[in-house]
Image (cartoon, rainbow, N blue to C red; front, side):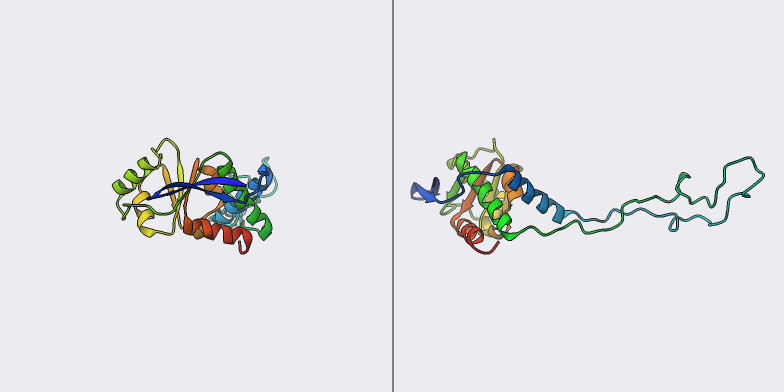
Length: 205
């Protein structure tokens, strides 16, 4: 059981949360690998010898030249010729069991809670879409930009206020993912995002 700080305009309190006590680095690696594989565009493409823009004419006679035997100039052995076994457009995505995805997300959040890098927020008082308003709130919350922050909130105004800051990554609650949690140093979630996270790890992934 973790005690997670909750910040609101009325002060600070703690919330008891049941999160995994042990973090499996290999499982996290599997989930991140699956995420990044889904993001790959898979558009790399090379031309075979049948696709390069060269004549298919044999460049010189087979015999009596004293030179090696060659066919057309589009052969892979020539500069500018076709590519053998080169990449072609493909889909890199694959399936990962839902329970593995759920466990990975829970472990990533638990890891931030274990390090004391998880903060829950009841309300972003005074933040109405302006970056300077978010900066004022962040300073009051102890966030000074020395650490990268993943901000997960259902409020479009708060996301808009924070998205221009180079040390803040903003996400809507449904976008919470293992890769972004691990690539940032602190995790800040509003209560709507926290409830959505609990629903995901307890039910639908």
